[in-house]
Length: 456
Image: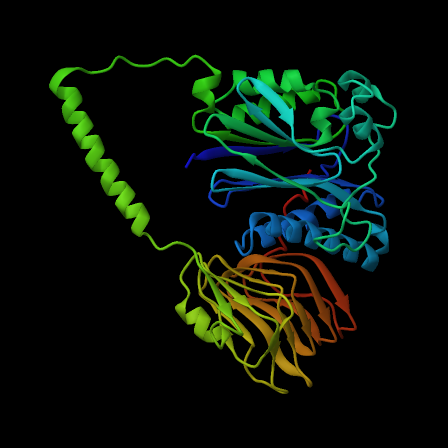
């Protein structure tokens, strides 16, 4: 199977003060995306950040087919942006356009909404895989106008399909364009925002890619530099390159080959090393998804006990009355899964103590009466996303030297929704706070850190 390497880059450009784009590339996951925020009284950057975090959270879980994961990720991102805009008047009207790709088993699967783009470069040719969901894009894709006319058209920045303007289902017709392309070792792919394609032609993009093949960081840097010569927009590029693409695109210098016994000895040694490496690679424990609920393990605690770093514990819908202790490197996720705390419970429902790189996503924590703490994070680095916590004395407590992130979560009818004490310094953003007795309590000796994307 071909291996790929990538680079993601985004730049605010020379005109706009704020970068409303977001990019992501992870070769180990095989996940890549570009998001371009828009609208909502300068809240486009909020939309792109919410969408980016939600996409990443869903695509990190390898449950379902690639197309299903992509559809669910885009729908979840859409709905998260929409819900935030409904709660915050200053974000009204915000949205984003996006292109997502998942590389798996020699195939690049993609999902797309709006006028960001995905290109495939292969055998010296460049081909656009996505359709622009815009008036000008339709004219160009149908051949009614040429590329140069589209780049100069006064309506080139209009779109009629976006993420965030209405609630969506993963299977909504006329919302997400999906597709799949072979991902050969001699091919490359480019995801980009219209800040690039509005000013740099496909031919010039192909030239830059082929001239800098073998160095993904140079490819994205040169593409952004080319756009910034004329662009008035943010510019983003995510470049993904197969292991043989550079060799097939450029003339490579090859060192002289050794001869005789040295060559034979080196070949024997090389084969032995390769056999040992392949054996070790095949025997390594891979990431697993451990199911909790009907057909799976009975309790969340039992599943976590069996989990290793890199595993995901997926909790089926239902009510679960148990105390949870997180483990390093393990993701705990559940849609419509509710942790039910006993009224007046003295201990936190979820505890992280000395844990690193753990994640909790999508769970609800509630009780019929008031309980002490929903989640306590102590001396740990944990990401908490899309949670709903209600009727707690304290919803989430970060203590000790804890770091990590809490975002896109809702707190209802708690005494204190979030408390940060000692020397903890988590990033906290995009929370919905309703009917709590107080706001976020920051008593830490560390100043609150800036969330990613806050500095322009």
